[in-house]
Each structure stands twice: as C-alpha cells, then as structure tokens.
Image 1 (tube, rainbow, N blue to C red):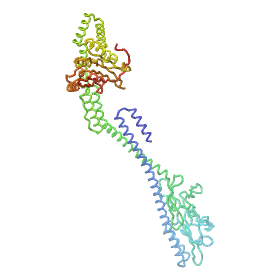
Image 2 (image 1 turned 30 degrees about the horizontal axis):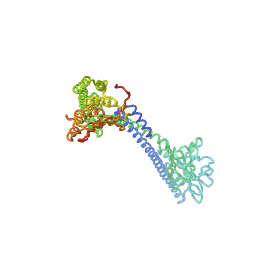
Image 3 (image 1 turned 90 degrees about the vertical axis):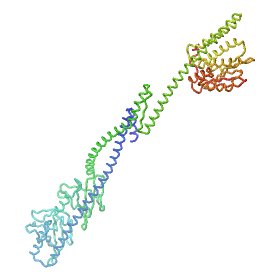
Amino acid sequence: MIRTIKQILKTVIERFKSLRIILALSLGVISIFTILLFAGFLSVTFKETLINTTKTTTQQSVVQSSITLANEIDNMTGMAYGILDELKSSTLQKNEIAELLGISYRLNRNVVSIGLINATGQLVDYAPSQYTPKKGANVYEQDWFQEDLTPNQFSFSSPHVQNLFEKNDHWVLSVTAPVIVDKEEYLLLIDFNFNSLGSYFDKVSIGKRGYSFIVDSQNTLVYHPQQQTRQINAKEENLDFIIDKPDGVYITANKKDTVAIASVSSTGWKIIGVSYLQESIKEAMQEVQGYMLWVFFVIVSLIVLISIGVSKYIAQPITNMVKVMRNSDENQFDVYTDETRFTEVQQLSGSYNHLIDHVKTLMLQVKEEQEELRKSEMNVLQAQINPHFLYNTLESILWMSERGNNKGASEMVAALGKLLRISLSKGNDFISLRHELAHAESYLTIQQIRYKNQFQYSFEVDDTILDCLTVKIILQPFLENALYHGIERMVDEGHIAIKVFDKQTKILIQIIDDGIGILPETLNEIEAGKNSGKVGIGIRNVHQRIQIYFGKEYGVEVKSEMDEGTTINIWLPKIVREEKGKEE
C-alpha cells in the first residue's frame, strides 16, 4: 500500500511541475488515504459492536421470554394445585365438582378446558359445560398423552391439538395430575391455550426476521412458530448445535446466525432465540455506509478546499521569489526579495539576496578587470613598439651598415622582424610557449648586438611543453629590467638564464640574472605594486594579465639579493594547444 502511494506521488510530481499543484494533490491524497484508513477501522469496529449488540439483544430477549414462560407455567401449576386442593379437601357432589371446574375455567382466560378423567380414560366432568365430548374419545389413547404424560404424577405435555371435544380443537398445553375423589382415582386434565403463549413469542423482537422456539430436555421441539403447520411444512432446526450447550449466546459455524439459549425453570425446557447475524449487520452497515458516504463527501470537499488554501499559502512565497528571479534574468539586479513567512523560505530569500549582491560585486569586479586588462594590453603594445627601442635598434642597424658589418645588421633586422611578427601574432591573445621564447630570444639577440656582447644568455627548456599556450609578451618586460637595472651597471660580463619547467598542472618560467640585485625597500615596493601603484609598472601589467586570464593562483614572484642577482618566477597553467602553428 505504501509503495503504491509512493508511486502515485512520483507520477504526480513527474506529471505536474507546479509546486502548488503537487502540494495540493499530496495533501489531498494523504488526507483521503488517512480518512479511508480511519473509515475502515470504524467499519471493523462498528461491525464488531453490531455483533456484540446483536448477541446481547438476542440473549436479553430469550432470557426475558424464559422468565415470562416460567411465570406462566407457575400460574398454570398454581391453578392446578388449587383445583387439586379443593378436590382433596372435601367431599364434593357431582354437581359441585362440575361447578368447581366451571368456576376455575371462568377465572382464567387462558384455560381452554378442564376435565376429570376416570381410570378408563373417559371424561367424567368437564368445563365449559357447553362443550360436547367426542364419542369414544379416550385420553389415555391420545398420542400426546402417551408421549409426554405419566398418569400417576404431575406432568406437562408438549403443545398439541386437543381433540377431545366436538368442533373445539385448540392448540393447547396440557397439565395432568392424579387425584382421588370419593376414594376413586381420577386424572385432572387442564388444557391451557398455547396460542396465547405463542402470540407472546411472536411479539418478541429478535431483529427483523429472528424468532424463538422451545425444546425439552431431550432437545425435542416443544414449540415452534411454524409448529401448527409442521406436519405439512416443517421448519427444520439444527438441534445438534444446541445439545449440551449451557445458557448463553453463540454464533453458528457458518457465521450467519446468532443463537441464544435460556432455560425455563422447573420444566427442563430451553428457549432458543435465533437472529440472522449477517442480515442485521448488512442492514445496519448499509445504513451507516450511507451516512459515511455523505460525511466522506463533505470531508473530502473540505480537504480539497483546505489543500488548495494551504498549498497556495505555502507556495506563494516561492512564487513571489520566482517572479523576482525572472527579473534578474532580464539583468535587473536591483530587485530583492523579502519573504519571511517560513524559516526555510526566509533562508532561501537571504541566500538569493546574498547571491545578487555577490553577482553585482563580480560584475563590477569583471568590469574593473576588463578595464585594467585593456590598460595593460595598451601598455604592452606600447612596450612592444617603444619608439626609443625602435630608434636605438634602427640606429644600430644603420651604424653597422655604414661600417660594413652587414652580417650583424642582417642578424639584427631578422631578429627585429621576428620580434614584431610574434608581437602582433594576428591579433591573438594567446601564443605558444615556443613562440613566446622565440620572441624573448629575438629581443635578447637585438640587445646583445647593441650591448656589444656585454652579457650572455641561455635557455633551459622542457621540450614537452613548448606547445602549451600562454599570454603573449610576458618575458620581454623582465628581460628589459634585467638589462637596464641589473647588467648595464655591472663592470664584468653579465648572464641571463631563461628556464622553463613542467610542474604537472602548472608551468614555471624562471628569468635569472646575475646583476647587482634589487634593494629590499625597492623589492617591497615592487611586491606591493603588483596589484596597484606606480612602482614596477611592467611587472604589474604582466602579473595582472596572467591573473585576469588564469586566476589568482597564477602570476609573478620576484626574488632578489643585493650583489647576487634577481630571479623572476612566472607561474602559468598547463594548457595544451589544440592546433599547432596557428599563430605563425
């Protein structure tokens, strides 16, 4: 069941992308599922209550019937003993006996007839007097007498049709008792109208179709609502179920009927009440389910309305944030959200506002960096085409030509051409490390000729990384500083070494000179001026361009010792070219 609910919710989420719809449907499904579970629990509980109520009602009806029947039998017994006492206490004449029987008959409306039977089974006296005995009728020969009664003791018969009188057959319960009148043995026979008792049983309510019947100690039917037609249409009862059962209430093996048993005192009889359990439950459940459907409809309607309201209340802050975020998609970064309805939404709102502030800061930073980059590139371009450098170079070429040093002039022209070609590099911002080193070598070649071999230079390069990319013209400013501020002031010949190392994900370029070095205070000013200031403009331009293109973990480091020389460390990312020779 839980897996099914999860699958339903997953389908809903995939089907509907709106948080409001998902919340409303989820709340509705969960609420309705809870109601159905509760309704199922109530249904089971109500069914059990109905069963217990049916059992209790049936038992109460049967117990009350047993008490009523016992009282009626006590009345019959009392009447019989009263007549017996009158017959035994005095010597009555024949007419007095008839009068006694008549008075007793008239005093009890449930008495059908009273008779005095002689030893041969013939009626001697009887009441009412207007009855006419059937000719040859013998009480002792009657089936009901032979089955149920004993002549020499007080006895009750089963209900039967009394046919001792002409045209006055009644459904009766007979009571017999032996009596001696004038030293002769007689049998007192009192017939009570059993229909009056039967009408009482018919009025006993055991459900709509429930009924009750009576059995004796042998589990033989004493009374049954259909007993009067039993000879032609008997209603069979499962009397085996009742055998040896004490008083109480039971459910039959097929779970369809409730059977209650109550004993009738002083008779050995049992009253059996039968109610149709499933019928009672079905009717009651149908009625209750009708009410439950109405209640379910009302509750579901309320749940739908509440779910819509709650989902709207929950989703509204997020909807408002979505509108604000859409404005940011249109580059409107001055719109903030101030949702504080829920803690989570408040945190999300704060994070979004912080993000907007961060984006604005980044945009401003990018704008500033682009401006700095533009200035740096302009400075680099100016450094590349330094008029003073070009003038000195061209003057050196002219001077060598006039003195016939055509070879030197030719080498300088070739180096200058290569330097300018690489500097332009077809407008690309990136060139290969191979070309950057060639640019540096061309510059050193020109300067070595101009300085008349006052210094020497060398390259130590890992050939495997020559095709990696770098920002162009990052070595020339440092070579220029090494010459003008270091080696130019030396008496002895100077040396400049350019080394390139593969550092896994990074590339390290070192420019090492053995010049006079840099004063500590000047070195501090250079370090502080890498990001701002007027000291070390060339160093700052290279450092900023590298960091703008590649990030803060890359850039320039300057190390120097007085009278020992200076080392420049340039850190670059290891970026492999996709196509070789593209800048050529």
